[in-house]
Image 1: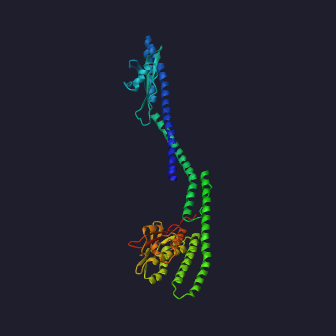
Image 2 (image 1 turned 90 degrees about the horizontal axis):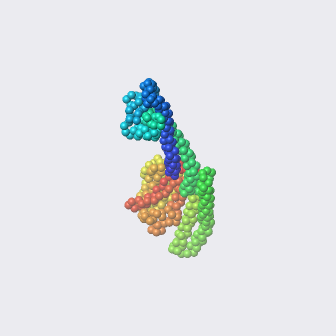
Image 3 (image 1 turned 90 degrees about the vertical axis):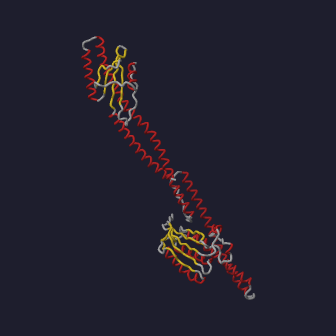
Length: 470
C-alpha cells in the first residue's frame, strides 16, 4: 500500500511545486527584462532631450548646430563604448542624425520597424518580446520619439545586448530550481513520515491477522498510533481476536474434557463386554464385532484428546536437522515395514536444517509414514525424501497405494474424513488432522498430491528461516 500511496503524494506535491515554480520563473525573467527596458527608456529620454537642441539649432539656422551634433555624437560613442549598447537618432526619413557605431541601421522589417513607426506616431514603442536564456542572439530594441513643438521630428533607438540579462535570469532560475528541489525533498520527507504514520497501524494489523491465520492466536495489535479510525479498528480487531480465541479455547476444552470423561465409561463398558463374552460360546461373531467397535471408539477418543492437545500446545521452535530427524523416523518404522513386506527407503539430501518443533515434527512424520505403510500393499515401496525448495525444507513421503481421486484430495486431512474405499482399514480419520495441527503451530504445512502411476505423495514443509513469533 505504501508503494502506491507514496508516489501519489509525491506526484501531487511535485505538481503543486511546478505550478508555483513555473510562474515564478517567468515572472523573474520578465522582471529582469523590464528593468533593462526601463533603463533604456531613461537613456533614450536623455538622448532625446539632447537631440532637441540639435534639431532646434538646425531649424533656426544657427551656426552651433554642427557643434551640438558633434557633441551628441561623442556622447553616443562614449555610451556605446562603455555599455556596448548600439544607439542612434534617426530622422523621419530613416536618415541618421548621429549613431554609434557608425554603420548601425534600424531594421527594415519586423518588430524593430513596427516600433519605429509607432514612435513616429508619437507613441513610445511597446515592450519588446521576452528574451529567454537560450536565445543567444536575442536583442532588446527600445525606441522613443523626439518631440519638438508638439511634433515628432526624430526617433531615438537603442539596441541592447542581452548576455548579462540572460545570465541573471539563468542564475535566478537556478536559485528557484534549488529551492524547488529542497522543497521537494522536504515534501518527500513529510510524505514519507505521513504515509508511515498512516500505514503503521495497517502493517501491525496485517501482521496480527497473519499471525492468527497461521495459528498464533495470541497475536494482538497495539493501538497506539495512526489516525483515530485505524486505532478504533485496531481495538475492534483485538476484541474480535479475544472472542475468537475464547471460543476456540472453549471448543478445545470441551473436546479434551469430553474425550477424557468418556474414556472411563468406555473402559467400564469394554470390561462388561469381556465379562459377557465369558458366558457366550467361543468364537461368537457378534461379541467379536462389539469388541472391535469398542476398541475403535477408544482409539477415536484417544485421537480426539491428542488433537485437542496439539491445537492447544504452543510449539517450541528451534533450528532442527531435518535430514537427521527424518532418517531417525525412517529407521524406527523400517521393522514394521519389513513385517508388512513393504520397502521403506530414504533418498535426497541428508544435511538440511529448518525451524521446527522436533517433537511435533517427529509426531507428524510418524503419522504420515504410518498412513503410507497402512495403504501400501505388500511388495511395493514407500519412499521418503528430503529436499530444499526456496525458503522451505521438505520431507516428501510417497507411497504406492491406491491413491486418491481429485475430489478426495480436496478433503484429505479433514477431521474424521476417510475415503469410502478405505472404511475397512483401521483408523479414526484424525491422524492427518493431528499432524497438520502439530505442524501449523511451528509454521509448517502439510500438502497432498498424486504419486503417478498410483499412490499418494504427502509433503511436509517447514521454514528454513526463523518464523516471526510476535
